[in-house]
Length: 381
Image 1 (cartoon, one colour):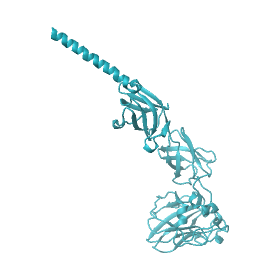
Image 2: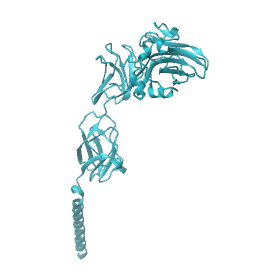
Image 3: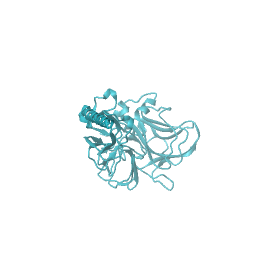
Image 4: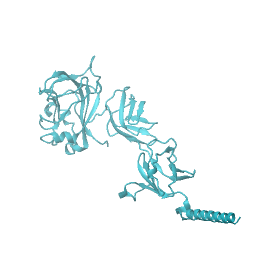
């Protein structure tokens, strides 16, 4: 009996110590053991003082606070984040903001703990407005389908053309929109709008600026016979008036001029290069449309633009290119073109020399069409 009483007394003492220890442990924890978010910051140690009230999709962030070790789930709006236990401690959680688009926007970060406790914190997922980068072809006929490339194309969305017409959506992917061109579409930028913002393109649809070779009208020294004015059976469709079709086998290093000439032979087109492009070529693109019925697989196209005399060695537009019988816009930084010339362009109010010349290594069974050679600003104003 004495032994039993002693055991009871010992057990009671141990239990009392355990309870007391538990109370002391909880009291010793920060914030009384309650979970707390103090702030959210970037993960770069060099910028640890950069506090965040929101972050973009997919961004890695650090959540700083107290008693966070029991985190079981984390939600941004209605999207669940992927947690790595290695990056969860009592005082911090490192996590990527979910990339998925929320359906219900609460602008709250929610942490669910293992015991079921929930902690809410004001935090905005900064969903990107559309990025409108380019079009497969900037020239598309009314009623045909234009393809726009970019990012953050979150539905519902609209594509509005200069002139006010809204295109009919054919398909929408994360980085591509296909839209049918309305009859009211005019030359100029397009605008893509979603619930998260709108973006006006820097490129122009049906860009009518600064054409130095487009055969509307034909000007120059060479080969008016290459100009297609009324496309027939087997010809590529016309996307912008007349165009050049070069269709014949050529031998390596043979000399094949397609179009162009000195300013005196091109009184209209030769003056279309803006002075600003000569003075600051880094602000401009060389653009043109190309259609390869047969692949451009060898030889070389030499492009002269904005020169005072010919350069027989530059600029080199190199193969391979295969548009599979469809029109496609080619975009080349104009500073690369200017850098290739032996004599750099200078401003000339009387106009400029231009030329398209096939001259290079390799035989080519050529069937390639060109249109709308132009020098245009990289950024729309």
